[in-house]
Length: 445
Image (cartoon, rainbow, N blue to C red; front, side, top):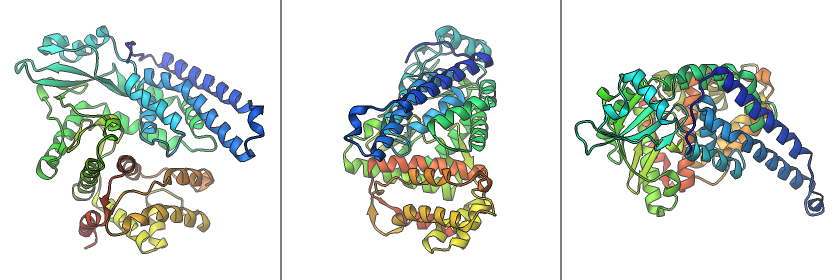
């Protein structure tokens, strides 16, 4: 990470993003027009086109990485979500570049950190804590995290999350710059992609994440859940007297990153996978309260423990929605296309005038990837790539049949993708049916 003053000026940010997108677009067009003659004899036309598309995307992504890391906010959040998809949506070279956002994003200098504390507590961090490290442990989309020591219990280490100055207004300004955001998304997803609902969803969820008082309440809610039912999941306690809307002070916890867990034994990865899956099912179906920001930087691990640290994005789901969701899952198992399509209509995935062939092809894709995990026994997720199939199918659907999916559906989908990607990378052997049916039952009586 490098020190760099956070830019909150609307016009500076618009210019920076616009310049970066324009430059990336130029690089994209340049690479698109270049053909390496020495490869023509060695590659089929299809192979050459695939290679060119890959190079075009990589070039474009390189031009955007640094800008997203410096601007933070909704722009960096897009990059973080891309980083968890591994090679499922983009070439691995691109997701590896976005992973750099987690490690090498810039951070606020000492003077700007002091300004934030003076504005919120009328004290410097060195006056509030017995020790305070000005270089952050991590810098993310909304704020950065610093190591500190409790003002009284001086051996107690703390993790202090500090929001970037006026980040809530910055997010609103960024997401009003719709033209540049559309250009950014179209660089990453060549072709016709409708992005208005994506921008709207990011705006809403990031706005909610800017309230650290609410995040502290979310943390305490989930701490109660894990303390009563999930002893292998740890969530740090919070310190209300050292927290407010823009600064959140928590217990400091240490662990391995997700990348480091890939070197654990398969037995350990199976244990973590089963632990993660059971927590997901319990919070979703029993408590109807999901953790909807699954990016890897929000977790730390031990071979027998999962540490969850960020609860800025959570969602309490209604009983009706969950009943419908269970009915949708059962409709796939029983090949009931009518019930499945009614769920798609009710939660705005498709319009009711969508042709039957489009609905049927979407159902076929969903069932192809869902049905394998309805078999009894313990086994890992198949190393197939459902995301590419969904993406290509979505791009072929005319805009007149698409809607903006219900926010509950979007957030649940995001949470599920986070679980899926972790279990897939770990290749955890999971008893899918036994765990799931127990939680389905209350919605089917």
